[in-house]
Length: 346
Image (cartoon, rainbow, N blue to C red; front, side, top):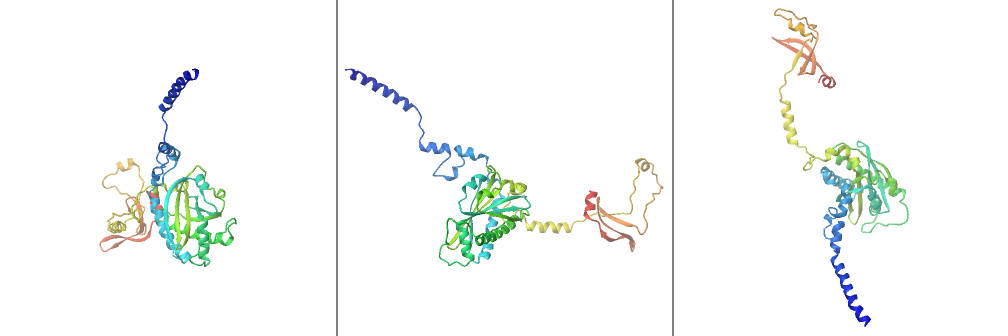
């Protein structure tokens, strides 16, 4: 009888606990993924929502620097031509993507073995990083040393890169850096020079781990061989030319219009200017000027052989000697005034 009496009580307790559990809100997997910012179906929205958006909010998107895409597209075209001449093979260079990343996160994500080329932007007074993966290294060595076509490049794991391999990679890096110099030239003169080669990412630390950087992933294909190379530019390196990168130029002319330049130059050559020939200048007080009367004579410190200065407004342009041509007074130009003198007059 005791068991029969306890059974209804236990059933009531279980039902009461079940109602309490049923009253609590339990998140499903989709809601958890949305909260954390993980969405398998839409990769583009992963960094725009949830906890991940808060974590990555400190990063600056490269889309705020529109000129970078034009520069890197120009770099791809230049690399395609230069690497074809360098390897004497059919080379195709493609731009995978441009992203923003923290420098420390990128060092931890570099697949080893790899060669890291640290280069210096002289005019910007800072550094950048080129990462060349092992597939591209062995492919370049195979192509430059006459490897047989149709066979994959041999990879020997567990050994450091030889001097020959490092030398060949260094030559290829120097070719790419020359292309980068040409790619930046229409925007700003920047000379990129190779500083050193490293195989350990910790020795290639050119910025603080928390600093933001721009990561450009490139794919280099040589028929049946190839690999990847990555270009990392810290935002501190691009800061001196940030205003230029913010401009939204369209096309490949970087904002230049040759038709307008020609028209402007033609109109400038046809512009008429009033030029004054200054015989002499004197400094007088206001009282003397106010006391001048009709018939007074002003003595000039000039003679027929004195030098005459020709001015346009307040800017001195030319100097010469005074003379006469027919019934007109003329000035024979002898020399031009230096622009430094003209800037001081301004």
